[in-house]
Image 1 (cartoon, rainbow, N blue to C red):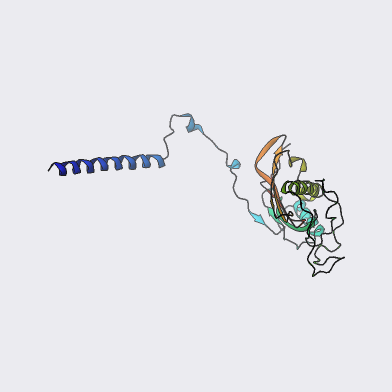
Image 2 (image 1 turned 90 degrees about the horizontal axis):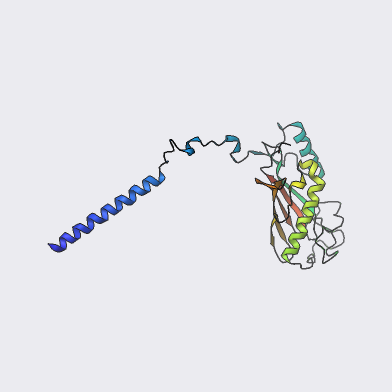
Length: 241
Protein backbone atom coordinates (compact mmCIF):
# COMPACT_ATOMS: atom_id res chain seq x y z
CA UNK A 1 0.00 0.00 0.00
CA UNK A 2 2.81 2.36 0.85
CA UNK A 3 4.45 1.74 -2.56
CA UNK A 4 1.14 2.39 -4.28
CA UNK A 5 0.73 5.65 -2.35
CA UNK A 6 4.18 6.83 -3.38
CA UNK A 7 3.41 5.98 -7.03
CA UNK A 8 0.14 7.94 -6.93
CA UNK A 9 1.87 10.95 -5.38
CA UNK A 10 4.59 10.87 -8.05
CA UNK A 11 1.98 10.63 -10.80
CA UNK A 12 0.08 13.65 -9.46
CA UNK A 13 3.32 15.64 -9.22
CA UNK A 14 4.20 14.82 -12.80
CA UNK A 15 0.74 15.87 -14.02
CA UNK A 16 1.01 19.16 -12.16
CA UNK A 17 4.43 19.79 -13.70
CA UNK A 18 3.18 19.07 -17.23
CA UNK A 19 0.17 21.35 -16.75
CA UNK A 20 2.44 24.15 -15.57
CA UNK A 21 4.75 23.68 -18.57
CA UNK A 22 1.81 23.64 -20.98
CA UNK A 23 0.43 26.82 -19.46
CA UNK A 24 3.77 28.57 -19.83
CA UNK A 25 4.03 27.57 -23.48
CA UNK A 26 0.51 28.81 -24.17
CA UNK A 27 1.27 32.09 -22.49
CA UNK A 28 4.45 32.42 -24.56
CA UNK A 29 2.63 32.30 -27.93
CA UNK A 30 -0.19 34.68 -26.94
CA UNK A 31 0.07 38.32 -27.94
CA UNK A 32 0.91 40.27 -24.77
CA UNK A 33 -1.59 42.86 -23.57
CA UNK A 34 -0.07 46.29 -24.30
CA UNK A 35 -3.03 48.36 -23.11
CA UNK A 36 -1.90 51.25 -20.94
CA UNK A 37 1.79 50.83 -21.87
CA UNK A 38 4.12 52.79 -24.13
CA UNK A 39 4.08 49.87 -26.57
CA UNK A 40 0.39 50.56 -27.22
CA UNK A 41 1.46 53.72 -29.11
CA UNK A 42 3.80 51.87 -31.45
CA UNK A 43 3.40 52.74 -35.14
CA UNK A 44 5.29 51.46 -38.18
CA UNK A 45 4.58 53.05 -41.55
CA UNK A 46 3.73 50.52 -44.30
CA UNK A 47 6.14 52.44 -46.54
CA UNK A 48 9.02 51.18 -44.38
CA UNK A 49 8.11 47.53 -44.91
CA UNK A 50 10.82 45.92 -47.07
CA UNK A 51 8.80 43.51 -49.19
CA UNK A 52 9.97 41.64 -52.26
CA UNK A 53 9.66 43.71 -55.42
CA UNK A 54 7.89 42.61 -58.57
CA UNK A 55 10.36 42.10 -61.37
CA UNK A 56 9.76 42.33 -65.09
CA UNK A 57 11.90 41.64 -68.12
CA UNK A 58 9.63 43.62 -70.42
CA UNK A 59 10.27 47.39 -70.60
CA UNK A 60 6.76 48.06 -71.91
CA UNK A 61 4.71 50.02 -69.44
CA UNK A 62 7.76 51.50 -67.73
CA UNK A 63 8.40 55.25 -67.69
CA UNK A 64 9.96 56.53 -70.93
CA UNK A 65 13.30 57.41 -69.29
CA UNK A 66 13.62 53.91 -67.82
CA UNK A 67 12.73 52.26 -71.14
CA UNK A 68 15.30 54.45 -72.89
CA UNK A 69 18.05 53.40 -70.46
CA UNK A 70 17.15 49.73 -70.94
CA UNK A 71 17.30 50.07 -74.71
CA UNK A 72 20.70 51.72 -74.41
CA UNK A 73 22.01 48.83 -72.30
CA UNK A 74 20.54 46.25 -74.69
CA UNK A 75 22.19 47.94 -77.64
CA UNK A 76 25.53 48.41 -75.89
CA UNK A 77 25.83 44.76 -74.80
CA UNK A 78 23.98 43.18 -77.73
CA UNK A 79 21.19 41.82 -75.55
CA UNK A 80 17.76 40.53 -76.52
CA UNK A 81 15.05 43.15 -76.17
CA UNK A 82 13.19 42.76 -72.88
CA UNK A 83 15.85 40.51 -71.34
CA UNK A 84 16.85 42.89 -68.53
CA UNK A 85 15.13 42.40 -65.18
CA UNK A 86 13.91 45.61 -63.58
CA UNK A 87 12.51 46.59 -60.19
CA UNK A 88 9.01 47.87 -60.95
CA UNK A 89 9.12 50.22 -57.97
CA UNK A 90 12.41 52.01 -58.69
CA UNK A 91 13.09 51.29 -62.36
CA UNK A 92 16.61 50.10 -61.50
CA UNK A 93 18.19 46.99 -62.97
CA UNK A 94 17.96 43.96 -60.70
CA UNK A 95 19.68 41.50 -63.07
CA UNK A 96 21.77 42.30 -66.12
CA UNK A 97 23.48 39.35 -67.78
CA UNK A 98 26.45 40.25 -69.97
CA UNK A 99 29.77 38.77 -71.12
CA UNK A 100 32.07 41.76 -70.75
CA UNK A 101 35.82 41.09 -70.22
CA UNK A 102 37.14 43.13 -67.29
CA UNK A 103 39.95 40.90 -65.94
CA UNK A 104 42.52 38.54 -67.47
CA UNK A 105 40.93 35.16 -68.07
CA UNK A 106 39.81 32.52 -70.54
CA UNK A 107 36.25 33.79 -70.87
CA UNK A 108 34.54 34.29 -74.23
CA UNK A 109 36.20 37.10 -76.19
CA UNK A 110 38.67 37.88 -73.39
CA UNK A 111 41.98 39.13 -74.80
CA UNK A 112 43.27 41.09 -71.84
CA UNK A 113 46.97 40.93 -71.10
CA UNK A 114 47.12 38.02 -68.60
CA UNK A 115 49.79 39.58 -66.41
CA UNK A 116 50.54 43.26 -67.12
CA UNK A 117 51.88 43.83 -63.61
CA UNK A 118 51.93 41.00 -61.05
CA UNK A 119 52.02 43.48 -58.17
CA UNK A 120 49.14 45.65 -59.39
CA UNK A 121 45.51 45.35 -58.27
CA UNK A 122 44.32 48.00 -60.74
CA UNK A 123 41.94 47.02 -63.53
CA UNK A 124 43.95 45.50 -66.39
CA UNK A 125 44.10 47.24 -69.74
CA UNK A 126 43.42 45.48 -72.98
CA UNK A 127 41.14 45.18 -75.95
CA UNK A 128 38.35 42.62 -75.92
CA UNK A 129 37.70 40.90 -79.25
CA UNK A 130 35.42 42.70 -81.68
CA UNK A 131 32.89 39.86 -81.44
CA UNK A 132 31.98 39.36 -77.75
CA UNK A 133 29.90 36.29 -78.62
CA UNK A 134 32.69 34.50 -80.45
CA UNK A 135 34.01 31.37 -78.76
CA UNK A 136 37.23 31.38 -80.77
CA UNK A 137 40.43 33.20 -79.92
CA UNK A 138 41.74 35.26 -82.84
CA UNK A 139 45.30 34.08 -82.28
CA UNK A 140 44.95 30.44 -81.19
CA UNK A 141 43.39 27.13 -82.09
CA UNK A 142 39.82 27.20 -80.72
CA UNK A 143 40.15 23.54 -79.74
CA UNK A 144 43.30 24.05 -77.72
CA UNK A 145 43.21 24.39 -73.94
CA UNK A 146 43.61 28.06 -72.94
CA UNK A 147 46.71 28.82 -70.95
CA UNK A 148 45.94 29.40 -67.26
CA UNK A 149 46.36 32.89 -65.92
CA UNK A 150 49.23 33.49 -63.48
CA UNK A 151 48.42 32.42 -59.97
CA UNK A 152 47.50 35.17 -57.53
CA UNK A 153 46.16 34.97 -54.01
CA UNK A 154 42.38 35.15 -53.47
CA UNK A 155 42.89 38.55 -51.83
CA UNK A 156 44.64 39.84 -54.94
CA UNK A 157 41.91 38.52 -57.22
CA UNK A 158 39.24 40.09 -55.00
CA UNK A 159 41.02 43.46 -55.04
CA UNK A 160 41.41 43.34 -58.84
CA UNK A 161 37.77 42.39 -59.33
CA UNK A 162 36.59 45.15 -56.99
CA UNK A 163 38.59 47.79 -58.88
CA UNK A 164 37.46 46.44 -62.27
CA UNK A 165 33.77 46.35 -61.32
CA UNK A 166 34.02 49.85 -59.87
CA UNK A 167 35.50 51.09 -63.15
CA UNK A 168 32.82 49.27 -65.17
CA UNK A 169 30.02 50.76 -63.07
CA UNK A 170 31.46 54.25 -63.45
CA UNK A 171 31.43 53.84 -67.23
CA UNK A 172 27.81 52.65 -67.26
CA UNK A 173 26.39 54.67 -64.34
CA UNK A 174 24.18 56.86 -66.53
CA UNK A 175 22.41 53.92 -68.18
CA UNK A 176 22.08 52.11 -64.85
CA UNK A 177 20.89 55.30 -63.09
CA UNK A 178 23.11 54.76 -60.04
CA UNK A 179 25.59 56.94 -58.20
CA UNK A 180 28.83 54.99 -57.89
CA UNK A 181 29.99 57.26 -55.05
CA UNK A 182 27.36 55.51 -52.90
CA UNK A 183 29.24 52.24 -53.37
CA UNK A 184 32.68 50.88 -52.45
CA UNK A 185 32.99 52.55 -49.04
CA UNK A 186 36.24 51.32 -47.46
CA UNK A 187 35.90 47.96 -45.77
CA UNK A 188 32.33 47.29 -46.95
CA UNK A 189 32.79 45.13 -50.06
CA UNK A 190 32.33 41.42 -49.43
CA UNK A 191 33.92 39.01 -51.89
CA UNK A 192 34.19 35.27 -52.50
CA UNK A 193 36.83 33.87 -54.84
CA UNK A 194 36.45 30.34 -56.24
CA UNK A 195 39.32 28.55 -57.98
CA UNK A 196 43.08 28.92 -57.78
CA UNK A 197 43.19 31.48 -60.60
CA UNK A 198 40.11 33.51 -59.76
CA UNK A 199 37.86 31.35 -61.94
CA UNK A 200 34.71 32.72 -60.27
CA UNK A 201 34.52 35.90 -58.19
CA UNK A 202 31.37 37.15 -56.48
CA UNK A 203 31.02 40.63 -54.99
CA UNK A 204 28.41 42.09 -52.65
CA UNK A 205 28.70 45.88 -52.43
CA UNK A 206 26.53 47.62 -49.80
CA UNK A 207 25.18 51.09 -50.48
CA UNK A 208 25.86 54.06 -48.25
CA UNK A 209 24.65 57.64 -48.28
CA UNK A 210 26.60 60.42 -46.58
CA UNK A 211 28.47 57.79 -44.61
CA UNK A 212 25.33 55.97 -43.45
CA UNK A 213 24.64 52.43 -44.65
CA UNK A 214 21.35 52.06 -46.53
CA UNK A 215 19.61 49.02 -45.07
CA UNK A 216 18.92 46.28 -47.62
CA UNK A 217 20.37 48.24 -50.55
CA UNK A 218 23.39 46.89 -52.39
CA UNK A 219 24.94 46.01 -55.74
CA UNK A 220 26.06 42.53 -56.72
CA UNK A 221 28.50 41.40 -59.40
CA UNK A 222 29.79 38.08 -60.67
CA UNK A 223 33.00 37.65 -62.67
CA UNK A 224 33.59 34.32 -64.45
CA UNK A 225 36.95 33.57 -66.11
CA UNK A 226 37.72 37.27 -66.32
CA UNK A 227 34.35 38.28 -67.76
CA UNK A 228 31.69 40.22 -65.92
CA UNK A 229 28.65 38.00 -66.42
CA UNK A 230 26.05 39.59 -64.12
CA UNK A 231 25.39 42.84 -62.33
CA UNK A 232 22.38 43.87 -60.30
CA UNK A 233 20.97 46.19 -57.67
CA UNK A 234 18.71 45.37 -54.73
CA UNK A 235 16.29 47.78 -53.03
CA UNK A 236 17.85 50.71 -54.86
CA UNK A 237 15.35 53.51 -54.39
CA UNK A 238 15.90 57.21 -55.04
CA UNK A 239 17.07 59.07 -51.94
CA UNK A 240 15.57 62.59 -51.75
CA UNK A 241 18.10 65.39 -51.86
